[in-house]
Image 1 (cartoon, rainbow, N blue to C red):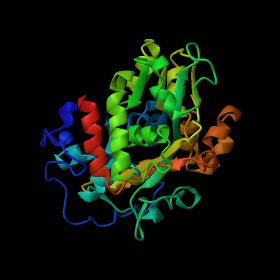
Image 2 (image 1 turned 90 degrees about the vertical axis):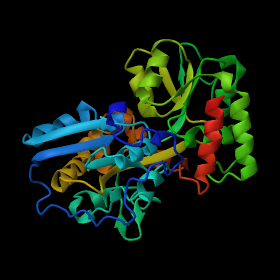
Image 3 (image 1 turned 90 degrees about the horizontal axis):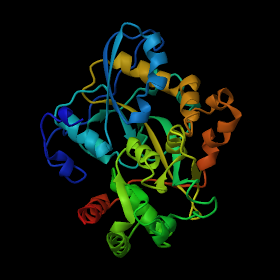
Image 4 (image 1 turned 180 degrees about the vertical axis):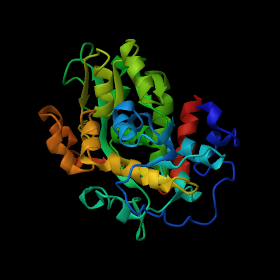
Length: 360
């Protein structure tokens, strides 16, 4: 992915708003919806997203339904990375946005409002009232996936019931056999706060954030790896380097597919929960195809594919289309008691604290 960065070579080292000045000072106009949202798309559509949103399993049906469309895909590890690359000149029509890390994209006006009239399943979707989805009356993204963040362990090495708390990530018995998410600061800091008994991990005071940072630094050698992609975690479990990591049921399913007896558990502190979706970029060229892709991803059929990958659906109509073994985890009600991941108002301080930990 380094070849995609055309300017701003140091942008990924920037704080939340980055070090280079791409983007616009003015919000882009609402992306006009196609006159016929069901018409096959043509031309070229470029999609910039997390790996699990651009799998062939999810995209092949869309390709088959739109044979005259050239579909280009690229992946990133965080919205901060995506924002830096878009601001640096990388071109995309559609970008994946997660509610807990979207400010680098919105602060530079790199995404534009959508016309929900062009989203055929909008009225059926859940999480459309989550903070960040709407900016006033404008919808900034279409929620398409969600899930809880808890613990993943190798049941051939760790007995069921032996891990049940985020504090277990710091248990000396698992030293050098733990991986911690590090593609952006929020999960690790929030999980550590919960491990320390802090009840409001998204509203840390300066003293609490300092306490979390020092705990991470003091336990740096606990972690075999600071993971940045699902592939990292899958490979670490498959190679036997780790027996415990943070993550969600979707990631657990990917690990299990390699033959590892991976299990997911909701920590006693309550899991975190995230919501992500697709947005149209400010410089999008093929709006009709962008809406067409979003409508496919929001459809019950596409949502059922996500459900069978271990994710929570945003279109409840998909639940009847999935196997019985996935219906409980696919149900949005499964995360109603989780702690929603929201971007803290002092997020730049979180970024600085996490960098200090990573530098150790």
